Image (tube, rainbow, N blue to C red; front, side, top):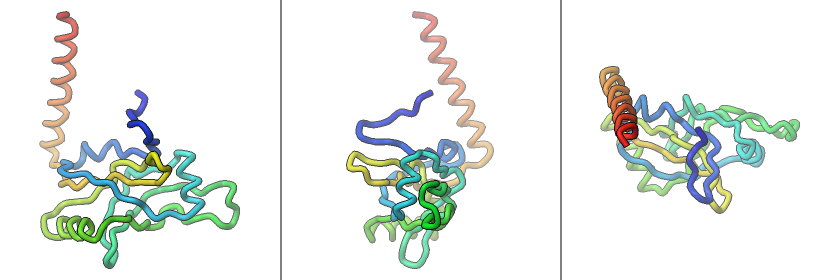
Length: 157
């Protein structure tokens, strides 16, 4: 299936398993501080955020373990592929996310990396709690039932 895109949005990396492993309660958009070679490499669309997460580092919120491959034409001026990257948020948003992760057991998960209509790299963050194994089984059952239900309704006419 082709990825669904909103007008003016070019999705570069998508964390499809995040909604399976976590119950996402809130989403927000954050900017990301990148170097020039990282932006050029992102435009190529080869980044992965499957194992990445966001967490506090001092007073900032950082994106850890996101893989942005080296830009081949950059020669010796390339970036480190898995370096921590600073997320650009308002102070109130940072404090809210850090407080939720420390006090209430939430996790900040990157859901998508995309370029907005102005050409800026953005990260869609989700605030969620990890699902237990029985919750995951229940979600799979519900998804299968909805698929079967839609099939039955379609076949009826």
